[in-house]
Length: 111
Length: 116
Image 1 (cartoon, rainbow over the protein chains, first blue to last red):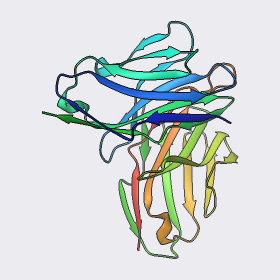
Image 2 (image 1 turned 180 degrees about the horizontal axis):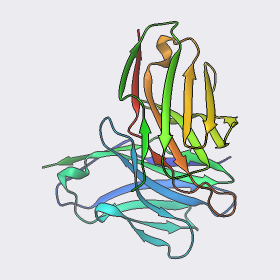
Image 3 (image 1 turned 90 degrees about the vertical axis):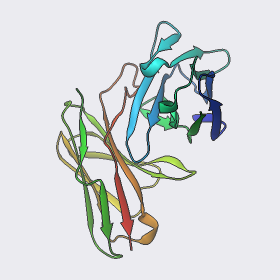
Image 4 (image 1 turned 135 degrees about the horizontal axis):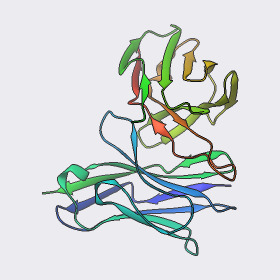
């Protein structure tokens, strides 16, 4: 069965520090992979996605993620956290006409 | 710019009322989805539709129904609202991807429904 695991439901970083949000998935076929961000009382907004090709994908707001097939991972990173990055982040996987979301990671940025 | 709109941002209803949540997309997408989002539970799929008048149950369809009479509009109906349906409801749409994968889902702003 397909699953998406986000390690750490809450992550805190200092402003200017590296952001690393972890996502692992299980899939029987090459999936599409996504990261979304959700600000309070808003819908989800696409940060970046991987479908095929280059395994390092760049998204909006300075975020990037790397697809590692051998590790079944798609971790999200940003070199330097800003206060405006404080939000909920969701990893998602699409395969065989099903869309699976992780349970989310709440990112806090400490000034 | 892509756009998914939902009829209300906040809604308060009473137990037993029939509730309609409307969602409209302007991207000519075939697929549309309704989710509910609750703290600690993430997003849970209620129903999705892959074409006009077509629908498929998601993970938690009980107590809900849907309607898709036009491609751009997907409605979620709570036949008799109950307090355990108090939640944030999110609508999304997507185009088909390759190899039977759904492509990017675009989300509306959400409707926060409170049932008293």
